[in-house]
Image 1 (tube, rainbow, N blue to C red):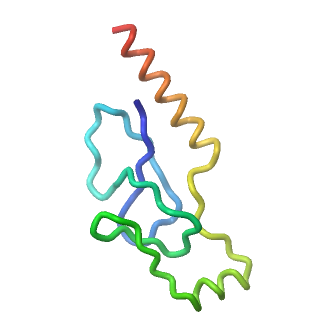
Image 2 (image 1 turned 90 degrees about the vertical axis):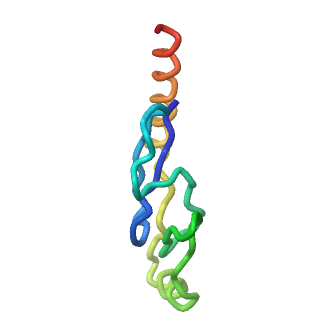
Length: 93
């Protein structure tokens, strides 16, 4: 099985990686999906925290700045396909 993991250092920039089941979780990553919408998320004490102030969010919205996005549909599809490949490989072993 493959799952998406998210970097936890600094402000989350929308990035993600794929992790195979048997791989250990890298330091500074989590499999907890960031909430949406997200402007200046940071991972603290095991949870995502929005650090943008209401004024910053309002300013970003007025300037048509998009919030940080979840993994794209393509990235989600790749994760699902990787999970299927892992499942089929396990059946063949």
